[in-house]
Each structure stands twice: as structure tokens, then as C-alpha cells.
Length: 79
Image (cartoon, rainbow, N blue to C red; front, side, top):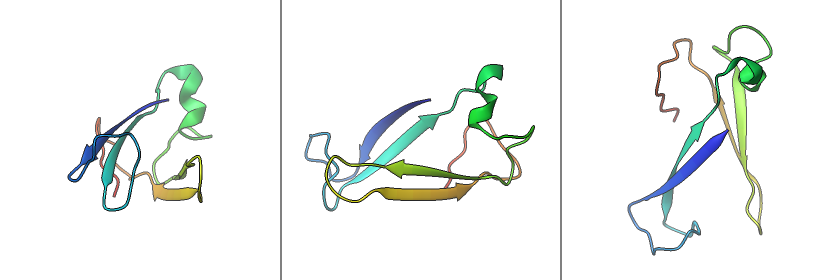
């Protein structure tokens, strides 16, 4: 899996997410045959819940839980 970040709006130029800053994360999950297990334990991943955990060096873990939509497009925005 690969990921990248880009700050949206207020940004003071460092790589630390601070109060009043927003960051957009782009996460790419591999879809090659050996990595299919990353998406689901069955043949389809639709309607499957997944969870991301953002773990800062200091502070509480931020969990993000979403459900994969019934229709999956090349690029998806899950809010």
C-alpha cells in the first residue's frame, strides 16, 4: 500500500497536522492477485467495512471507519 498527503487550505509549510489545518490523504491499495487479501477475504469487497488508524507520535489514535460502496470505480472519494 502507498499513500501521499497534501494540505488543503491553511498550511504553515511543515509536515505536521496542527489545529485548523486539513490534510487530504490518497491511499492506493494494490490490486495484484497476491495482494487481493488486503481488500477482502472473499471474492468481492463491496459493502465491506474497513478501518484506517492514524497513529501520531504523541497523542491518541484517530480511527476512520468506512464501508466500500456497492459500485467501485477507478477513483473513489469516501467521506
